[in-house]
Length: 151
Image (cartoon, rainbow, N blue to C red; front, side):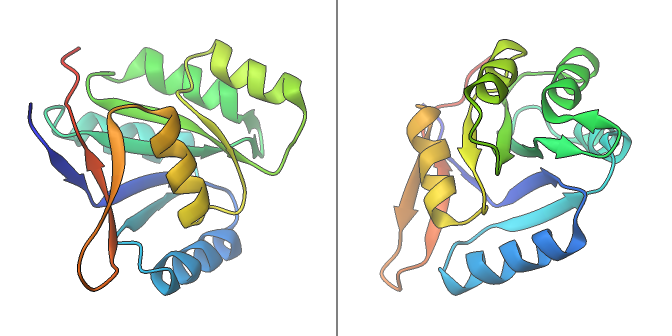
């Protein structure tokens, strides 16, 4: 079993302000992650095409994007990118059960509620059995891929 620390989170979100606030909150909560912000599905896809598929990649998609819904973005990414070691899901303010069902139906691994913070990342780790949160002696938290899925 190979363990990996996931440092980067690709975040498809249309609001610069939302991403800025998430970064501040995650930093204040001592979460050792870097949000890579994508405003468009195209830039997310380009980044995923360039990634090392041997490394676990975590992608979080906003449910309500202009011009495309989160489930449609996930469906597009999963059909155009290598899904090996790709963990993708939704972060939303919507509490409509139909939104969650639509997301999971297209292959989202998780559906968590905004804001994106340590609590929502812990929920992602609970829903994705290969992920966990580790805390060092200074209280800094990291996302750990406990096992790497092959294909």
